[in-house]
Length: 80
Figure 1 (cartoon, rainbow, N blue to C red):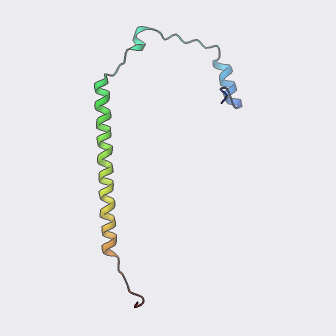
Figure 2: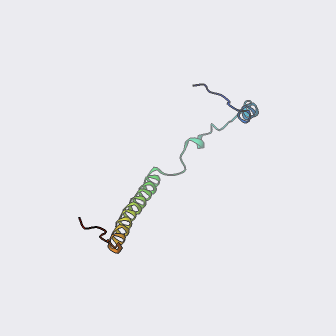
Figure 3: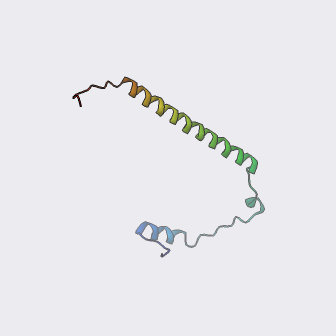
């Protein structure tokens, strides 16, 4: 697999930024601004919310199936 610009816009971007220099090697750039515990707590809350939403969605689907099944009128067309 080749690495490089594949179309005209990519080639222009490579030419534009080929000579750019970045100097962000100060000590503050290596220190996280968010504590790991806060991040894990946020991820846990997000996962719990998603799990609750899936459970509610499943329950709502079952209730809708029940309503449709109860409101269906079955008519016998032929005697077998």
